Length: 149
Image (cartoon, rainbow, N blue to C red):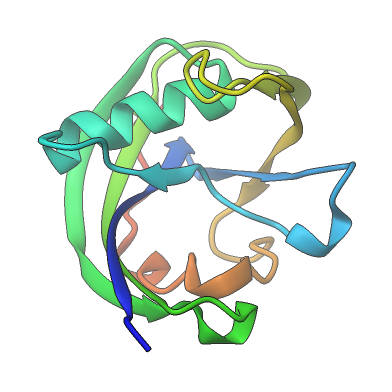
């Protein structure tokens, strides 16, 4: 069996002492997630994480704070012959947002049917729920950003 290696980006988006997470109401088994996605061919991880975070959250004003590291994740638990090579970043939200909102992610216009995301803020570190599929692997490296709210 051939195992595919897929380059991914994971975004820890913060606003002061809060972390942005989301769930997919139509797919409750997808659990609580953070913005993440696949790098496009030739795309630098720093550019890819900003693109993915904007697509999945609808937030246009994001600042790259730090690269947190890289980790591999075996997708065998999801019956996929894939190793995800994940590049983790800390991004700061530089605009006002509600405590909770809904956004319809379209994969940058590539997806026929949008996916509904229910986004909400949780306090760091005490309110962080379990993040699915190893997406929370580098949360310990997170430094909450700025004085906003």
